[in-house]
Amino acid sequence: MNKPIAALVLLLRFLRAVVVSGLQTVRVILASGRPGGTPPPVALLRVGFAPMSAQGAALLGCMVSLTPGTTTIDIDMDRRELLLHVLDASDTDALVQGIRREFEPGLVALFGTPAQARR
Image (cartoon, rainbow, N blue to C red; front, side, top):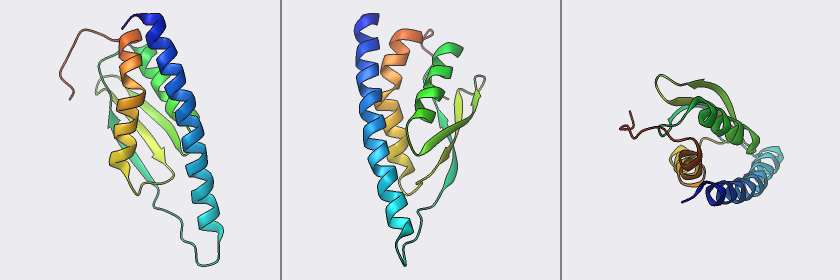
């Protein structure tokens, strides 16, 4: 995939993720605020990311933080990991898979480094 197309696809996927995550976050807040409502579990989560430059990792961290319900706390380039605070940790596998599916391909196309095995 060429870089302009990768950038456009990444932007569209990011915008969709912001809208979907925003709606999910509103649902969590409203459900937790109801009488008898219980908030979902929150968590700190380490998420490995694909080989990419520091600029790509920083952009990934920003994209994750701008998606409602998640905040990037740290980026460890040596271990290729993000440390995230997650508002709703009831399905962390789906969260991680969403990041890998929606954000990583475009970022790797734009900021990828020579292939390495994911640690």
